[in-house]
Amino acid sequence: MTNLGDSSVDIPWVSTTASEIAAATGTSAETWLRLQDTYRLWELSQSQPDDKLTDVARRARLTSMVPLRELRKRGEIPEGELEVQERAVCNFLGIPSLEATPSWALAARRSESDAPLSPPQLAWLGCVRRRAAALSSTAYDAGGLELLAEELTATIREPEDLLGLPAQLAGVGVRLVHTVRFDDSKIDGAAFFDDIGPVISLSGRIAKLDSVLFTLLHEIAHIHLGHVEKRGAVDIDLLGTATSGRERQADKTATRWALPKALGIKAPISRAGVLACAESLGVHPAMVVGRLHHDGVLPWSHLNGLVPGVRSQLEAWLEAKAS
Image (cartoon, rainbow, N blue to C red; front, side, top):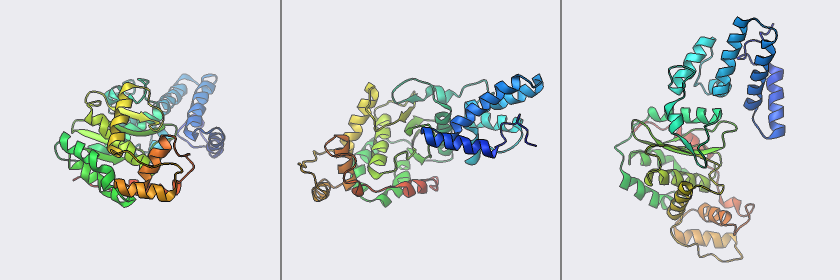
């Protein structure tokens, strides 16, 4: 018989129901499973002895801190007894006990507010830091990074050109990683300094060439402008309207790097016109389409055939070795 006091046990009908509710509400199954754990804690408080309640409370605390099931699926947290998973979560977060808060979580800052990171966002950033710590790079070269940013859209002319970016960034002292976002996190990217140097991570939430390049340039801008030397940047819904001065500054810098020249394209906008404009600017047509979409000149549904997906190229970054 299933032990309902063990919230690490996946009950098939519960998991299925959570997935169905998530699909119907546009949320994630993890959110509903966390609510399930909270309800289970209350239910057991009505009938279970104190020692049993303590175990359930400890498990509920874990699932309220991080998306435990997803971390186990990713191999970041091992299966095992309660004590094993508690130690693993502490190790993952770099904290001495579950009552502590990671110092790097306090230093990270969301793009539009000082609101605390949510459990999925905290887990994502933890995965980024763990991945970055396994990589090496040369000493940070601020001038080299700026030059790379200025030339980025002129050098990434095809999706396959993305494959060399981790090595190029490592050459100027920046570790670039791809870390798949967690459900409900809405994270696009992050930039921060750790004990080794600067790190940039992209989630690939919108895995289109123009979005990926702009997100990368935005994160480079945060480093270039000195936004992340003391506090990291965690960018949420980056393609939305920026409201903070820091984000507007990073957007402006990234936009200048992405397309330093005026488009010079007139209505009616056609596929042939976009291709000719991109050729004259020396960039991939996706960058022109992306700018036209963002500026409201071209409906979001138009000319998307000129914007290739780059999911496979981002996933290839996961195999990148330390330089």
